[in-house]
Image (cartoon, rainbow, N blue to C red; front, side, top):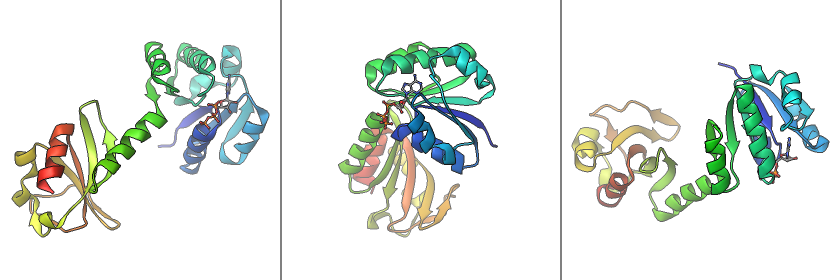
Length: 217
Ligand code: ATP
């Protein structure tokens, strides 16, 4: 379903969100306080405007109330990011905000941001997990203790069925999907066979996943 988004702050982060949402066919209003930044997004948004996102009246005049989600991608100027989040929550819409550091993150959570994103921290964690193991292709944190990882199947798993591998009973984690080239088996059945080089999408606690990766792969 197509949605209405407002992206505030058109730096690298906000700009890439704006472009991507627009290319996915959503309605996107792009906002920045600097005209040059707004000009860079005219072709990649439904509409764009030079506006101070801390100014409640200005945002109300833009009809912000009717948008599904506001993405506040103002990083450097923490005061403006916090102020803008407060105003958007007062207006009554869902707000996703980019945090610059953990203090900023805590403040944003306290004032009611619906989601706080910390791109550098999150990406650093994902990359560290990929570096940690030769088999980990990607890593997504679900919570502090639970994750989804993509693991490359080794020869040890080759030509064995899921029932034979018995990953859930042995390691406590669940194989959600099996990727083979462009094909993705999103509801693998117990008799499905794993091939070497398949990518297994596995969910579990971090310790279970580590155990599976070290002993089961
Ligand atoms: P990135 O790391 O994503 O590239 P950046 O460092 O280029 O970010 P930031 O300083 O984090 O940019 O700010 C992102 C954008 O937010 C800038 O283009 C800035 O002009 C804009 N911005 C700052 N304050 C406001 C405000 N009050 N209202 C609207 N836009 C703002």
